[in-house]
Image (cartoon, rainbow over all chains, first blue to last red):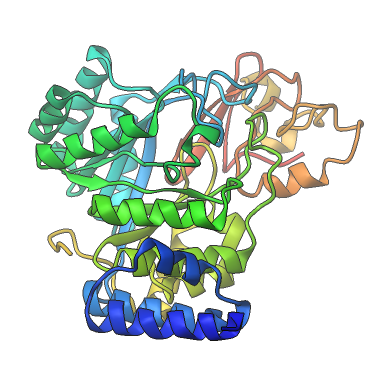
Amino acid sequence: MTAEAVATDILHVAREQVLERGERLTYDQIVQVLQTSDEQLDELLAIAHEVRMRFMGPDVEVEGIISLKTGGCPEDCHFCAQSGQFTSPVRSVWLNVPELVRAAKLTRDTGASEFCIVAAVRGPDAKLMEQLREAVAAIRDSVDINVAASIGILTAEQAAEMADMGIHRYNHNLEAGRSFFPNVVTTHSWEERWDTCQLIKDSGMELCCGGLVGMGESIEQRAELADQLGELEPHEVPLNFLNPRPGTPFGDLPVMPTNDALRCIAAFRLALPRTILRYAGGRELTLGDLGTRNGLLGGINAVIVGNYLTTLGRDPKEDLALLEDLKMPIKALTDTF
Amino acid sequence: MGAHDGSLDAPERPEAVFCPRCGIPVEHGDHSVCRAALALEPPRYCPTCRRRMVVQVTPSDWTARCVEHGETTRSTWAPA
């Protein structure tokens, strides 16, 4: 069979299996999707968009994220400027509760329904748990927004405590497929991340779990991440595109080609037909304005608005105008997918 | 204001000596990549003294504080 015939075949399979029957692609099928040609890209994105519209609808979930504790992390995630193990120029800093509340209000003003508090740590200690409790209470007292958190590896007790605080969703990424993970992180294992994800699900919080692409992984390893996320069944998958940060081990890697990134979006949607698939870091650099639009028409149904943790994003007004142009309403606070 | 109160108010800020992204003197090398990158990242080095700044990014803004030359924000920042 020629390469073109294989590509045509996998698109037919995707339409029949995912769109018509609602069954996610297998690992081998995800690999085939990631191997489709540029000539097949428009059709691939169209199928992924149909899948998104059929199983998730037209709404887009909007979220803001903020760093409670920046930098000085003991872990060595090779993509991250916040590791204390590299010569990154990012300095350690903590944000106070009034600033967190102010940021939550400004995020809510954009129409966002989610506000995620992040800390650059291996996992929380008692002090961080107390600060988080104080911050979540202050936000919930004065801002009508769902509060999520991302503060590393958890124990079962900590997961239960966070659910008790009112944190409705917890982010803990797999970051990479299992076979590529040792190339990305050496200070903890993929299995530790997987176990924390299971704890989160058991706690009653929604699980937000994704990763990065464009870190030098093979197509097969990229497919592995999508497949393993499909097995995990998180409520949300944030999809990051590597933004090479100065001073990190991945600082000199090239930016992922736009079409490869769009193929990833479609592949992840077809691997996760009923999951919120969110644009996370790196999209401005990797996709630009046109690519951002194409991704929203290729499987994405959630965005992070405004800035990221250490880098800057698009003006929220630009994203909101794009959603209006695409006739994709912002998901209301009370709605659940 | 500017140097008098420690802020980095753009109109009165001394001319940048160091690249706010890589910290290398602006006279040395080509900083066009740094200038382009600063559209999507806040400054990390004080352009006057090269100290690493304490940077806080929020969804709608950022602040960068040099222990010697004070604080600047997105609205008061003028790229080198």
